[in-house]
Image 1 (cartoon, helix red, strand yellow):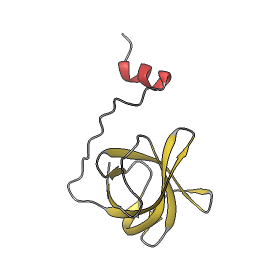
Image 2: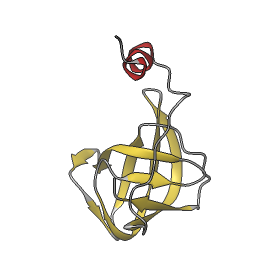
Image 3: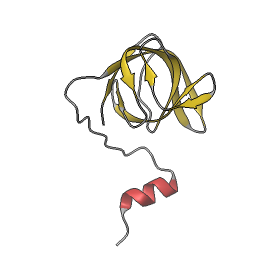
Image 4: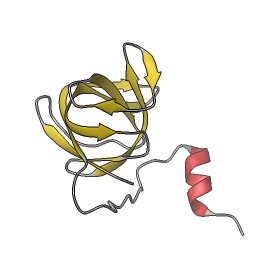
Length: 107
């Protein structure tokens, strides 16, 4: 039997996704300065205003998406702390606006 989620990923269909937030309290906050599209993925550029962020953590705005990777100065990094200006590449698109502060949750 073939897993349907594998087929959706192979075929590039990302409109049907369900991501749950596991932790109850946000571990960080991220202020969006710019919203980009890179390789058909949403990239949020901004500043970590609170806490510590790792790839795999989830960004929550109007919807939720896991963070695929974090870059600072065009270099991939393992984490970001408060005060860092970074780019977050997301697995799914999160509707948001420039200047909005998004919450970050542990996966």
